[in-house]
Image 1 (cartoon, helix red, strand yellow):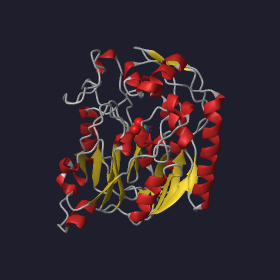
Image 2: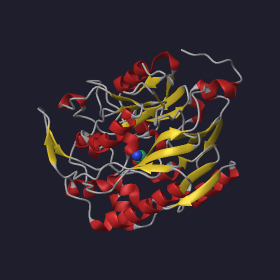
Image 3: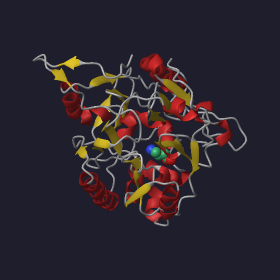
Image 4: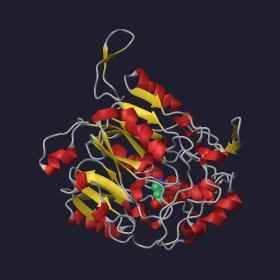
Length: 384
Ligand code: ABU
């Protein structure tokens, strides 16, 4: 069970103050991990990959699977990533990075072999809940060893007092994937490629609002994965499922984001606001505007993500938010809702899996564990 803020002592008996401490998506950001592009390799062929790649990018993905990403994609993304890191540092935020790794190297388990992918998106492979950092059991075989590039960081955080956990390492055998899967047609009931063979989840299917977590079931997060998180966290936390109408769901952070106490940003195509969990009844539901179109043909052909990356913002604190410069309609909406958007470029990161929220993992935000749904609803806190 995860325990909020418990005293821990180092070898010399001195009290350790965890360098990992983040309870929600909006407390003032002090330290963040930002992903890397070095060694990025296009995901190896697998049904769980191809079912999530937008149809227009599927051909690129099939042809390029297992090869290094071309410089024509890396260079603009690297320029934007460097500027993003500089921006974070200029805001007084400590930025840490994974080790550079050659993701093209082939690896095997007793059941299968694959090449790697990249470590552009730390948001997927690690879930920070308070002082605990959890390595997630990801469903894409090419991501099996992705957290190894963060191990130097994880060990350092652990030595300095963080709690460090890895969810059960999945087997990822054929039994986890439905061989007859095809995305549901409009009007058909939702279905997923994953079976319930074992727990799997990506951390990016969860967002945190103190004692309340919100999760979408997806083609990388199954029911057992959600249940594992729920039981692991125990009665101090509540895990609420958010239904997505996306036919190929993967990651909550282009569908539903919590931006500040009592304020959630929702994707109008994927979310039916009438079906949000009751605990959000008193929250302001901010409906994201249609994303500004992206006309660059290379980006259109190679993006691993859908158009709603306009929602993939990173909160610096309850008001300041880093958002994509290209998405001027979203910038204006954020202003209208009372936020202070800080425009930054990261459009060229889309072929590597995301934007500002995906590209980061907020390991420390200044704040304490609170229950925002109770406060917003004016009810007394109900724990467990
Ligand atoms: N990693 C977020 C990407 C989700 C999407 O394609 O919308």
